[in-house]
Amino acid sequence: MLLGELLAEISPVGTDRFDPAVEVDSVTHDSRLAGPGAVFVAVPGFNHDGMRFAPAAVARGARAVVAASIPEAREPGVAYIAVEDVRVALARLSRRINGAPDERLRLYGVTGTNGKTSTAYFLAAILREAERRVGVMGTIGFDVDGEIRETPNTTPEGPVLHGILREAVESGVQDVVMEVSSHSLELERVAGMHFDVAMFTNLTKDHLELHGTMEQYYRAKRRLFESACACVSVIDVDDEWGARAARELEASGRRVITVARTREGADIRAERVVTSLAGTRFDLVAFGERVPVSLRALGDYNVNNALVAAGAALCQGYAPETVVAGLAAVEPVPGRLERVPHDDLDVFIDYAHTTDALACCLAALRGLSDAPITLVFGVLGDRVPQQRREMGEIAARADHVILTEDDLKRGTLDEVVADAGAALDEAGADWRLIENRWEAIAAGVERARLGDVVVIAGKGHERQLILPHGRGVIVLDEAAAVRAAFEGRDPRELDPR
Image (cartoon, rainbow, N blue to C red):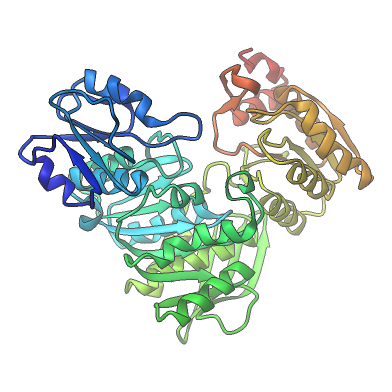
């Protein structure tokens, strides 16, 4: 592609040594990935300004540098382009260099604090029932037909994101269901993309280390629906933030479909909900029709996720019968109230790492069994103290609590114990600290042998544990640790430290 053609995607505010006839073939913000023909986008990061790495990109063959301003020191034979918003430029240039793959896909975006992954997999199952070839992008990676490609983020930066979408188109994928994180919206990773349907699950207190306040967090999420490229919005109005978003979007003239399990007046509703350890059943009531739905997924909150997925499919013209068959076919989503197989013991692994997700997880288990609940959990080390305390307050709803390590990142376990542990004490919880997560899992399985329902919360599908203060990342397979404990082996044998 010619540099001039590529830059038609953005509006430069200044250029130097710009030759529109220069051939370019890639866009990157990582100088280590630059090569001959690359356009290097100098993104201002949280810790370093991308311009620091421009000389390295040029040394590797980059033909152009896009930045917030044109630097005084410039390399000969290299074009420098100044733009108003570097992050928007990265997204739009990445999209263009990959041939705007979103225009050749039917693209569904789902955002919300909790439920994104389950909603995405529910919708993908419905679309597959309609004989569509589907990719799912999100927390688990990029999944096509069960083959999962790891991605660096829930919603990757433009070069990775659009590269994956281009490859998906080339391999015959027709639809992509994307989790769209608040980070990606705040950081403009999906700028310029065309979403046929945008979905909203819920908004609860999380990621305030990035957004600052719930209002700012909400505004970040709402950007997905304000985009001119979001054709239809499907919003769960059981959530108060969702109800607000629906009102505001409808007032602006946008097409909105509302779903709800408890709120009256929604376009799509669930009635006669029945939950058990065998699965979930409910009646889907939509646009004058009522059809029975059966889910293998556990927990009444998954009814809401299924409603959002159903709304997305119905608004695209798929029949209720297709929706029902697709939802019935959904395999349990990895790490989402996932039961580790055993004839007699009930041990679940769940990704719940926010206050609302943990509350929903515990409430779901209460609704599924009368047995006491043992919770094994940790708290992310980069959470603010108030969030750690709130996690402790929610954890106290279990009958027995084992506090252990999670991704500590920039924090320490002592800080987690000082906040979450204090909240557990104030609630009068029956709790203990077991620092080693593998040992904590073994203790949880012992509680299961006594008849408890056990949930190991926080990591879910993740297969790594981030150690504090840059000490590295180690492999963690919680299901394998549980199975080892089932077999009478010591799960600490699996701890690579």
